[in-house]
Length: 410
Image 1 (cartoon, rainbow, N blue to C red):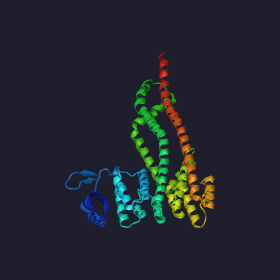
Image 2: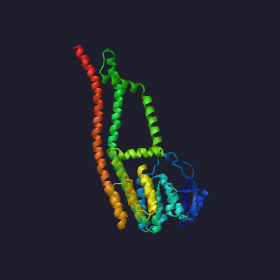
Image 3: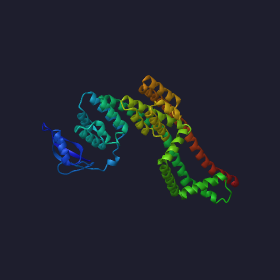
Image 4: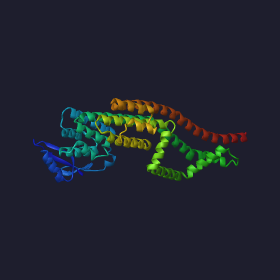
């Protein structure tokens, strides 16, 4: 379905314009006519404008850089909930969101959703046609809200959930940014020393005709390899990374890698806590919105990001289908901490599973924050010590032969 820009007149004779998706200009004119709007000009919409007669044509040169972020969807969801709570009809809400959207991709998606809703399609079904922007979780919660008749409350809950996920992701990313930058700076400085500085200094040692210490010989060997075969090292590194990524995408490779990540010292507990927090928050939010449990478990499985825990949730879903509760199969797996399974079990018995899951998610979000802070605090001195060790090795490997030369000269 293509996007078309149009100019038109409404029933009051006022000029209106916009961008809508349709099968053809004729189909767009028919849709607009049903809405009481009469198109005067219609042409295919593209990105960059080129002056010409009538409507400006746009060339799609920036579409590859136009990305709809999760934050944008969260803001849109919150605004839609506010507009619906104010009693504004859904199609007018979508039109208001369309007019203020800054991303062209999002504008096209909203235009298509509005057109379909105006033709009688349910909002959830219209959103499902844009899976890259609106996930299964999003679509199913909207469908549940439409069925229960409390769409504004569901959208509010959904926006809060998305805000929480974005905050958690940003918190982890910002905490790890400094160690990553330090690591890249250290690699860059070391590479510069080995390729540019060390060869010039060690050239002096070749004229000495004297046996060099083992560390100086190792330094010269590494420097020559880095200087003469840097291109081969880059190719080999790229090739190994490609092979690793290809292996990681296989079911067996992903399972082994994810199992190793869960067992990794310091990092493993954080990975597990993030996944459990996401599991509890998503499960609680969707159940509170009226999504059926089996469908919720299927969606929750897809957002965990860890194959080991995904298999656990998949087996739990089958056990629930056979009549068990949520807590028992999770406890049998041994992958979920006893505190989590006990709280879920209490929530099931008391009929307050949703609130108990929210409590678990809040507790694990706090714990993740503390663990990430400790991990960052631990990584910073380790990186500094590693860089200091490498620089110290280079300096000693150069200074020792030079001290020998000065002793010989004395």
